[in-house]
Length: 173
Image (cartoon, rainbow, N blue to C red):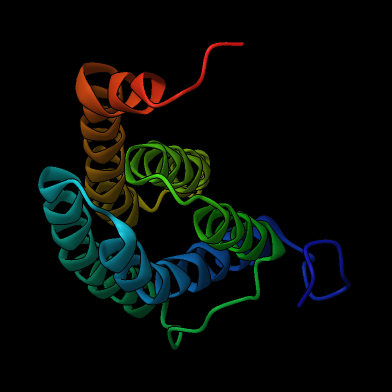
């Protein structure tokens, strides 16, 4: 089901499609994070990615609860946006030899993923509320709070350590 197809006729259909989109995205992220863990060289970053992998698995479980509340089977809708973000992250990571620069790039890539998720969950919460689905909105809000917290941790890692280390290996222009 594409975003603008005849399969989406109602606001409920649109909500379900966005839920399927983010469910697909979270499942793709669980496949991408082990590669990021493997590539990360900073122990704090590696640990952060490991923590986020476990957190993402819990988010998938909560999304499955939202599907159950809707009386739907959990199912993902292919999301070209997250596929593109992950593809770009993999390409960038494979092109960088310096470990400090690589860690900065991994943080940037992870933040691109987090920002995508933040937009999706914010929209889903607004729509769930509009549809009178307060229980679903609360579950989605708990996930959104985790996404914001992860983004904040990544920003702190980047601005207090990783970016400065990456800059230190740069050659003067």
